[in-house]
Length: 216
Image (tube, rainbow, N blue to C red; front, side, top):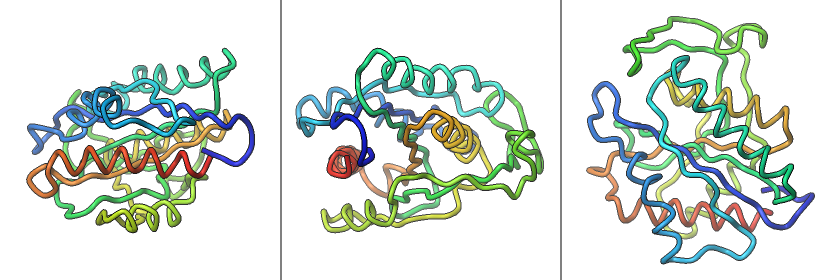
């Protein structure tokens, strides 16, 4: 996931459990089944699928679990493994296509309480980062990845708006952590399985991993 350093890249993946209005989160199923799916399908030689973690759909309350996932990438790198990357998957129940998120904003404004009852309004995610208008961007070439995936036949777009709910909250923390530790981070919004079925979504995720391996 980058031009310098080791040629092998390890990618750690997260999804989310259910939340208000979405009883079955497709990303829980995608992330839970990803290891067995890619074992059957095969991955590029220079790509290793690391941890696959399903997070509680919560901001502050799930902070500890998120940081365990982020820090595991650093621990592996220190053990001499490889370049590290994080991909976070979240659902956008109103979407009709996949979206690769360019950035996250330092603002938590939850339209409904998260699964642990937190409902912040116009609160900075990281107060030490300053204003809620502060953004952090991925260092991955989102437009290039989008073009590559479109060529493969997927309906996917780049996006500059990851919302202000838990998806954006997680992505902001991940991008900040990635910048501090020299790793890569990407957030991907997927539709419901009613809109794009499970099999297509699993193939999309595998194709995204392949596209990231080509970048490395």
